[in-house]
Image 1 (cartoon, one colour):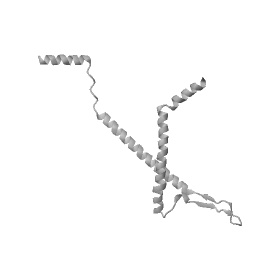
Image 2: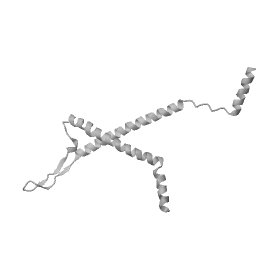
Image 3: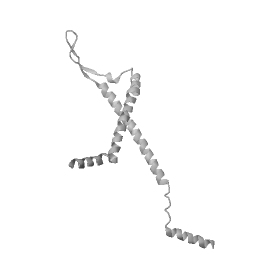
Image 4: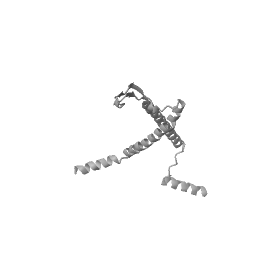
Length: 146
């Protein structure tokens, strides 16, 4: 009995409008993130790299300690590197995502304010006349015609 009550309560929670809206927002946000990541990786960063001499930011690193090699040339200890190129790439990704989200929110706010302005400017429809008003109008018209 307790399980069915808990299940019912969970269904009510999960199917509320705001939970569904949030889920849709997360899904659309994930897809939007993929689009922006592709924009950064496939379009913007190659252009930036070409401008500064075909540098691939993801490969930029500084070696803090060289690798230790054995007598046969095999690696005994891996090199210690500071991979700052990935940080630059991720920072650029973030800035572009933030800029895109800012632009979308700005457009949504502008559209919302325009819709509100039109709604405020539109005159309210006249209320329907009551039965008494209709009857008085008919009497007036009859008296006017005599």
